[in-house]
Image 1 (cartoon, helix red, strand yellow):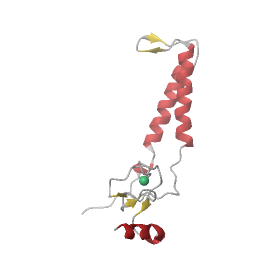
Image 2 (image 1 turned 90 degrees about the vertical axis):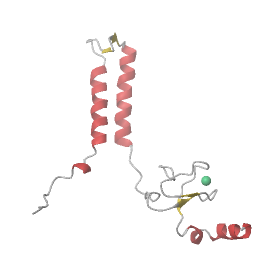
Image 3 (image 1 turned 60 degrees about the horizontal axis):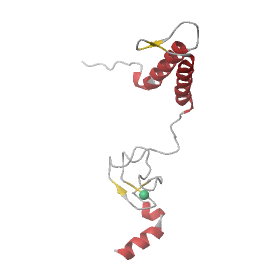
Image 4 (image 1 turned 45 degrees about the vertical axis):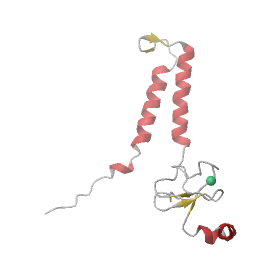
Length: 130
Ligand SMILES: [Zn+2]
């Protein structure tokens, strides 16, 4: 008999973030300007290079902590077709850019379903052209 074993959902832990934070900390701690020489590929890194690395490390940390995926915009383009409200280009499933913006107009895409109900003015133009 198969038994369902309750396990901690490892997938919920943002491993990507954890790794990036660890990476940034290693850079910062390793390059922190101390009297201990710091080497990259056999070359000693000067104070300026160290500060650059520390800044880079903090920059990465900043990105990790301040980057929040916008929850307001539902990622719909994976589930349904989308359309650009500006140029009316239709994106099939998997065709839409990951950021859900039209590559041409950089305008946020909208779900195709019900699009012409929300924008009847566009519908009129299109039916006239057809
Ligand atoms: Zn467009």
